[in-house]
Length: 271
Picture (cartoon, rainbow, N blue to C red):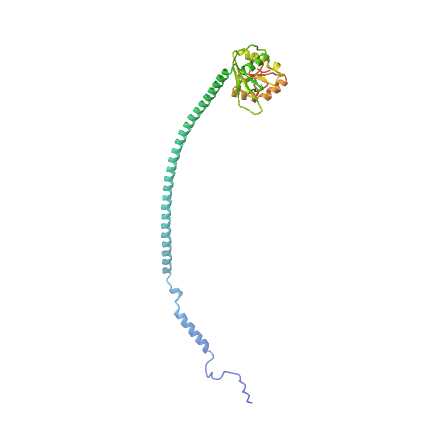
């Protein structure tokens, strides 16, 4: 087996008489070529760069001026439109105010008329109640008399009047009155010829009929009847404390004939 000879120290074979600095020379020559192909910084014209910047800046400023002018026109148009709308609204508000004033005047007139009508209605209702009260002036009602077939209402009324110390009284008419109820007899409505007979009967009824199953009461209008029932509990309480009241002329009255004020029970004109 042949062993290759060892390579000695020195240049590699085939290098010949080439100089050692050949590679460096090659690199320097390349660098020189590139350097010759690149432009020199000092050769770049500075004035051309300034002109381009000025051109761009001028274009930007022109665009800004155009945008500002357009925005100003739009704002001006918006302001004009706002003024027109505001003017229209002012006119509408003015018209509404005028209509509101007219409606207020009309409502005031209607309210005044309504108040007058209510006052007139109350006055007429009071007058009608007084007229109806006057038409019942000589009437009394006998409550609790049992209904019998073929009864004579005038004879029954005359017997009751005799018990209350009004014998041989003159009775214009007597009949049953009111709605029919299953467990209650209808009232006997009696019209007397003389008012004083009625006063005497009402004055004596409490003691004369205390053992009877029936009683006598005044023939009141619906308004007076509601007013009487309204204060019945207070009247009972006052009677238990020694204050006697009687219902006459549509209100409860004291012994002196003055109307009793239940809202001011301690008024000076009351006992």
